[in-house]
Image 1 (cartoon, rainbow, N blue to C red):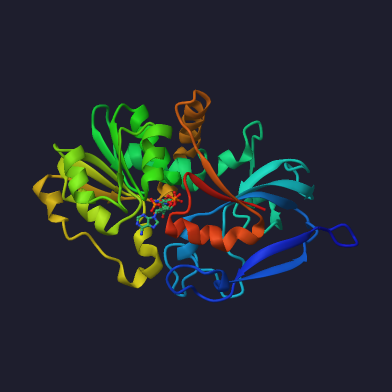
Image 2 (cartoon, rainbow, N blue to C red; image 1 turned 180 degrees about the vertical axis):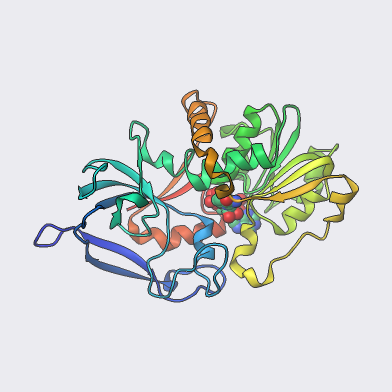
Length: 338
Ligand SMILES: NC(=O)c1ccc[n+]([C@@H]2O[C@H](COP(=O)([O-])OP(=O)(O)OC[C@H]3O[C@@H](n4cnc5c(N)ncnc54)[C@H](OP(=O)(O)O)[C@@H]3O)[C@@H](O)[C@H]2O)c1
């Protein structure tokens, strides 16, 4: 779609109201307008894939949290990859693939300094998934630096069939650990053991998580990589082993009501077992992104690491794709392809 002077029409999602609980399509407004001609130092980019991330939900709250709050009427924040279609910036040319905070829209004009050029010999969605900031890099530092996983250890991962969890569990396997994943439903449990090579899976929707952890890890957990929080975190801490590590990557079960976040009632087990719980964000490891990217790319190339993708077609699907992250509608990396 383009205007008379050949500028494409940008289709974008704005925040209409702050969501109450689970996000709904009515929380957003769909707007179409001509894209803007790039000024000096700027480029016009066509979005190819949008990364659907849990932090988008927390950025929609009225109260500013850890992530910058989107104002009412503002463009919904999202990381994305795309292609430069017009450039007025040195260093980027039409046809270059780029990644950056492009937002939930089909076209955008950005200062070139906001974007990172990526090597498109790989499918460019890889820069949101296995090599992406909020997926591969997060899993890498969380499981290796915070979790400090070692060969022979028993590792439990929650949200294991999702983007970060599936990579964290696979890295633990690469390092020689025994890996148990927690996910919702029999299909996801099978995906963990049959597609990703995890040693065992717990279907938290149909099984007693605490009982299954005891059964699968009778000697306790050396590492728990948590994406979910709430009752799953409680059950895992209750089974932590002496000198065990709990890596707090996220708590998706708590994001829809951040005024009432539930902490673990079992936390004294940390003291009893000389264990520790440590949180992190991927940004704490910024100076080592290149090192992590190179190692992840090596594992991808050798076939040791897989990043299945769940792609929702069309920019119109963005609100539902975001909702699905909170209802378990994805296996692997959730992306919107405009
Ligand atoms: N620390 C950091 O820097 C950082 C960076 C990026 C992401 N994160 C965190 O990593 C976590 C995973 O994010 P992601 O982007 O990879 O998402 P994802 O795991 O691909 O998708 C979210 C998954 O969470 C599960 N889930 C949703 N609500 C749940 C609930 N109430 N109880 C149990 N499971 C639930 C769903 O799977 P089921 O079907 O299994 O329920 C869903 O598929 C999030 O907590 C996010 O905040 C942290």
